[in-house]
Image: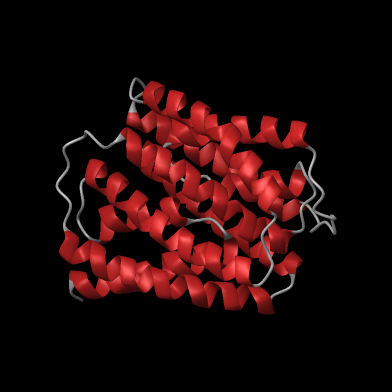
Length: 247
């Protein structure tokens, strides 16, 4: 199978994940770029941010048109997390990559188990500024430190901390994903990396299309089922990353 075909298939998977789950962009894109398309880690990280930003914006528009975005919660999360994400991103360069990978895998596993065990709430979506800002700052620090968009943590935080319904948490988390990814990409603006646009563009094209399909899928699946699927996918990714770090 050619690398272009692999790029098309991997991009579609990432787009569906972001559109349906509001997460999974970075943690699926980076491994796909490295292990399927032959990118080095530095190039894969930068390329994944480009893919995630464009795809998350597409998915956000789809969710917003369906009225499935809690704008106040998302904006509070995003605003509170920008500076912590930038500071933590600078600190992360001092930590060995294997240690960061293990930390990432452990955190993802905790979030996955929390989602698998928690019932989908029927929250009203009313947001208190204090808890939203505190959770957003913590989320920004963690995601900036680990170099990801943060949707896989934003969704559990919105559901668990603010009792935002799962369907709305998916759309709202995309605001956080876009903000964190833009901060991370800005931090890499002066880093010299060689990006293979002949693979990035087909990856990005199917990711954008997949994001619309993911939104339609989310509208047909119950919040509880969506939450369990999200947790299972996240747990599988955490296990794979943990094994990669120790082997």
